[in-house]
Image 1 (cartoon, rainbow, N blue to C red):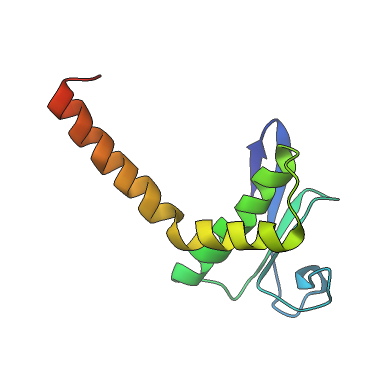
Image 2: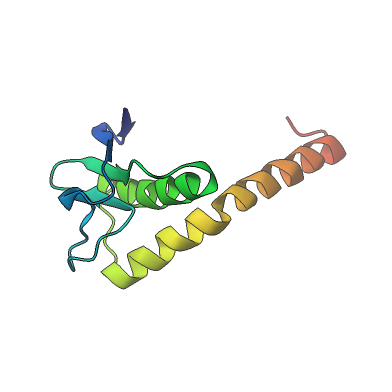
Length: 109
């Protein structure tokens, strides 16, 4: 699979859960890693359901950060990606609900 962000092609690759591609820069084995050197997101092939959603969302945050050349300290970047993976869906859903209500109330198109 692949995704294009800011004209940059990123590959999404499922790998075995013990794969070296799932080692973070601090050598901790994790469920997903975004490698900006090769424009790949590596995901454990054991992920499914809500955990797959959360890890994929987290890693896509890194993809967008890298693709737009945004710089964060690694700790800040991880906190942002974690926040979006936990609350992003709710924020977007609430925005859509409220925007629909605003458009109806004020007849805005």
